[in-house]
Image (cartoon, rainbow, N blue to C red; front, side, top):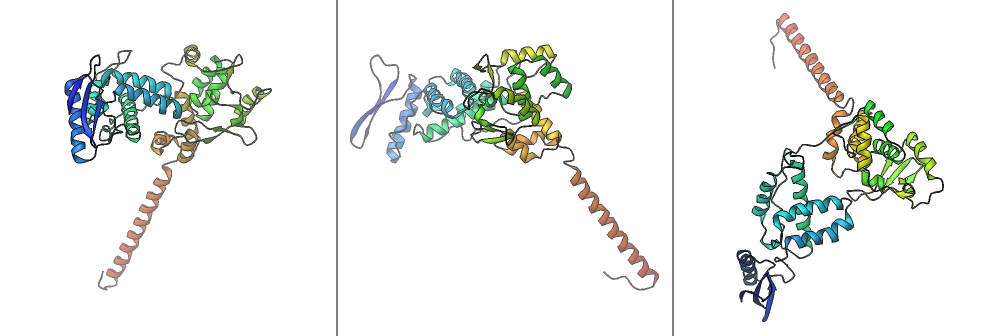
Length: 365
């Protein structure tokens, strides 16, 4: 038993006996101290009878990221491109560090290191960005446990940063008109659909005609970010805008196309339209906030709004609750009735006591 290096190999190998058989296994690291830590853990588990040969504590962090992206993110998530960016950022810190040597202390050290970074524009990194990367790791390590790579999630006890600023940029009616007037063709229709439905960009660009129900007036979102399909209401205005486009199109064809091909990227065209309209600090995703504010301001209740936006948690939708008109009027009326009744009862009691004292009768309670 012990640690050794094979000729031509950078990683330390550990040797031990399991059920009478000699086992040689890579620690996945060229760092002697990290390899010793992994080996000591294996020895302890062997002594306790808890060692699982399926566990791969020596697997490199960067390899786990690759596996997570290929087996999970690419297959099950709509945010694969963003996950790739996050994965690259995490590799900068953890690199080929064995996943079995990563603990809560290491994750918190990474978080402290990450908070010192600045963005490409020279601004301090936002807590929201760090929280997204931490959430990525939490999910990845949970799957590593599920896949038999690890025994426990080192991120489990590490909490998300508090005080995260939620971006809530919205357009008013004048800005909406200006933006639509500066957008043409497919971009104009995508913007109108985004403002009306609150659908995410990926949901809109992945929309097919089979999911547009003109008869019942709704759009079926099948591949949502949270994994749950939903129906989004479609107004007569949007219906009239889309119907002419459907002629001659097949059910599986994409709704939004340019020169007969599916629209994949809107970034440059949308940015140019915003500049022509004189709208600053505005992203396509902010159209979703604009839709939510219009729906809430029009009286849409919070539960219905949650369904339309496809939020997994009601707390995500609560940021628009203050826009719902008359939401607090009912509570004012409740308290007003309470005080009116209380004053009325107090007044009646005082009048009764006064009458009893005038009659010369003793007042008893």
